[in-house]
Image (cartoon, rainbow, N blue to C red; front, side, top):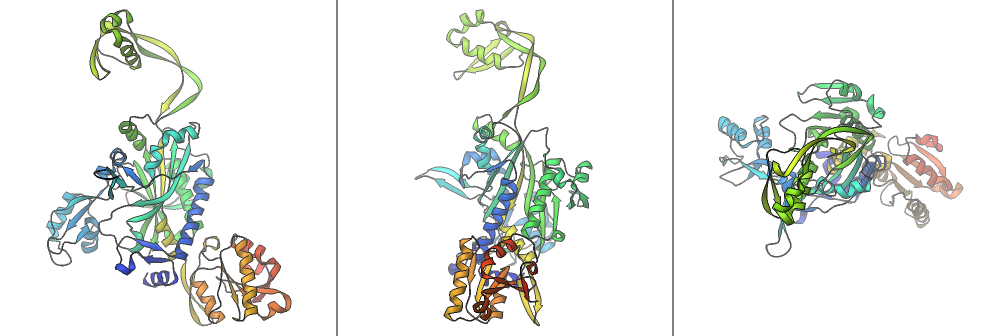
Length: 565
């Protein structure tokens, strides 16, 4: 880990935020190469979860008013247990500290943590005793507007902005389920004691898809695409399965096809981004581990130098969010789903007696009648609130009849399947899985074997000599490549071998060398990062050749005359 982190900092992938002021845990800067890689991973995600789904992408504010997070449950339930040293004042996340010091898993409750501290006489690193454990809300609190203003929070996830906009979004999709709504953006969690570099951040990047479906139809039309894929699953009882997704659904390991579909699609995305299959598994949350909104959840975990690290959560959020926002926002967030054919149903209907209501209630009679007609059942007395006043209606003012009606559909609150991706963790995981050392010409070489289409610098043009005529041709080639959307750098410093090593280390898949032969026959060499093979190619074919190589898995030897293997 120290070897790759040193390289990532030195070469310009990741830097410590606020470095000249001593830094601050939980924050990082994306340097030029790291930012380029992350953006390309974002675009790959869009290709999978927006372009190739019935989905759209929106963008909502990163600050939310307090009411949103009361409704979502985050204001009350989004907490970790913290322990503070009475001597030095340091604060630790309790379950992490217990795991680190005692190698014990502890339930994240105040009572369980307090019991462990007492039983093992657990002390702070300074030797001091801990105060009583307390719940700590992980949301950053803020005030919107001047003076006392309005209380708000930095969002802990991008999802709530989508749920709040559901009514507009369902109109956009003509109320036809299923459909997906995606959002990529910043989220914030005020971690108690963040460690592990980019693995646990206070400000991070999420890519989330909220996939709305009928509560009774948790299937996907493209499930067959992944049904026979063999995946590694670890169920909530810690039992490992190497199994197809179809069999996992049939055996009830995965609750339904829609969850299995997104597990399969997530796996395909991660493999295409450069995660190694042998270092990828999907782990089901235990019953006491799931978030307050989830009825089932699977994490995509990647094996890193830190251990198995969650990079994606795939949750069945049921109708929790839309029901809560319906309740707190006083706006019905449902969809009318028509039946294929109308059905006849017998139902009891309350019929107001206007000849009695009118004289008794005068100007309120019409409103009372409307409210009565909305009810599906009634006792001997009904209490209604009319114009802010409670009114008691006895059975003398209405009758109940059984009627037969044609029903053309039903209103449902859609359920939500949510694949949520931590882009920072995925970016780091791709870097670590791509980082290798080998030997070339008897010397150790560090190389990032990034997927060609994700490399932040796709081509380096290297004049063999730093003379003006060599550099001039190199700049012309670079300009042509850039004009065709290929990120290209020109490097003239140091020996050609040293320059190759520099670009191998940052993951550049191809180096183009302008040498003496270029002036004789207008050809250049193209060198492959992974094999170090080189071919000669005519200058007029450089752009088409590079494009062909970057967006395919072709061997470089297929595109030109082998120069040196």
